[in-house]
Image (cartoon, rainbow, N blue to C red; front, top):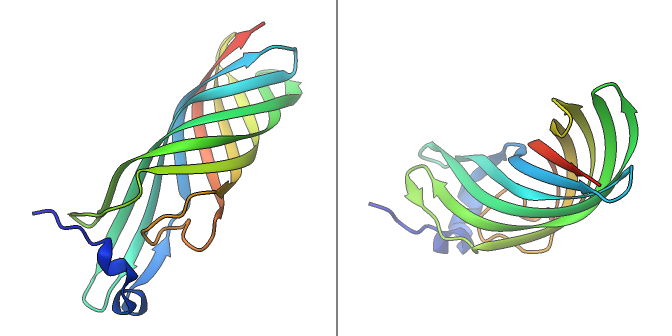
Length: 171
């Protein structure tokens, strides 16, 4: 049976008896970029993000996972290219929709939408003329607070890693 444990997260007993060990935020996705000029691009797509933590209670340790599907929109500049590799910098934002929130096998309540603004540096490896793999360390500021204790709680600034398969539409 599923239980909603979001209400206990605000209690003093919950805050004082649980210890959270947060794992790095990871995002994977499919993105498309349009290049209106030789080095300028606008990028969007779908990103799946997971926030995971180990929650240590006086009785046991449980895994908490919160998953989102996000729609990023970034604009950037590709400043270096060498063979199949390119380097870029971009700024933008993301709107995320909650997919699931669980502590062990228990479903948890959480706000359905999260918004953030961010900046990222990226390295892209071209797999062909228009297809490539992108690896982008991202720093973001989350504008929406979470109800659950996650890596974003109390720290609206977050460092995450984005890995995506990217298609580029040339001008």
